[in-house]
Length: 113
Image 1 (cartoon, one colour):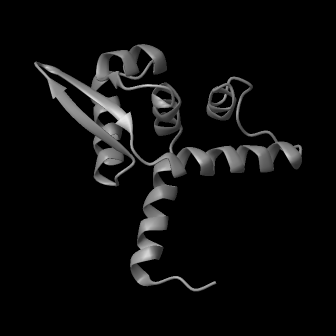
Image 2 (cartoon, rainbow, N blue to C red):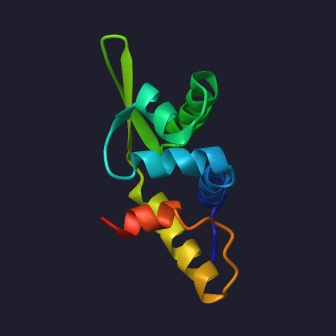
């Protein structure tokens, strides 16, 4: 398998997004619909400043998109392949009987859809 430098950087950015539990929580909150920052904070327990920092990083890497309506910012997932990658990783961990994610994981939310 050959990777071009641009491909390697893009792949590394996606893995960096998945390497932080708070961002995985945000992905879980967004997996079924667009949500406001306030709604994301309520669902994840993150403080607004922390959630906004992670959402900005996710937006900069092309995982989520944002629209503004009045004073509210709404985010949605625009890179479903990131969710697919999480699902495959979770299934692989379950097959290896090495669960690293709690039962109410992002993957279970995705599988319910």
